Each structure stands twice: as C-alpha cells, then as structure tokens.
Image (cartoon, rainbow, N blue to C red):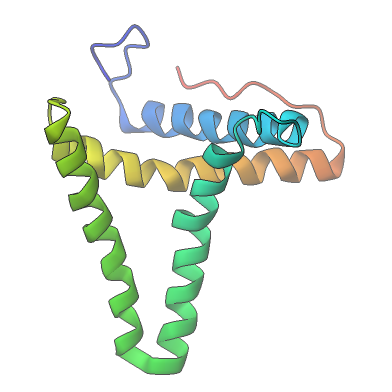
Length: 132
C-alpha cells in the first residue's frame, strides 16, 4: 500500500482509510442498496459478520461453554489462511500480510459504518475522514 499513490506509511493512516471505506460502504448501501444493483450491500455486510457477529457469538459461547467457547475464534486464523492461499494462487505479493490486513480491516470498516449510522441517526452532517 505504501507504493500506491495514497502513500500510506503508518498504521494509523491505513486504519483511517479503511474506516473511511467502511463509512462509504454503509452510506452507499443506505442510499442505493435497495435498488436492483444492491450497491455496496455485500461490502457493507461483511464487517458486521467479521467484526460484530462472530465476536458476539464468541462471547455468548464463552458465557455458555467457558473456555470451549474460545474455539469459535479459530475461525479468524482459518480465514487468514484461506485468504493467504487465495492471494498466493492469484500471484499477489505478500499473501499472508495481505490476508491479515484484509481481515483486520473488517474491524476498521465496522467502526466506519458505526460512525456513519450514528451520525445519520443524530442528524449530523457527514464529514470527510482524513487519513493524512
């Protein structure tokens, strides 16, 4: 990503840019998701699964099954391995690093979506999320 024209060189810049993408996914799905195109609906749904639903299910599982509930969190390293293999087969550079950041990005995207919906519910104007 640092070679890209965005010249992101810090984790905080990457996090904010990814959060901004989540915000854009939420806004696009909210404004145009009901059309036949289903604009950004799938992209807006993924962070809710990976950054909200799975951790929530893990907490419930831990409450019900104690330490055995932690097994649900194994889905994260399995997903990273799956993505890394996918990137490797596509001859992408640094497939494991890309896989880790792809999954970690779901948490930043989720936070960006929460910001969008929170501001929308409060009637606040949407401001640009700057990452540089």
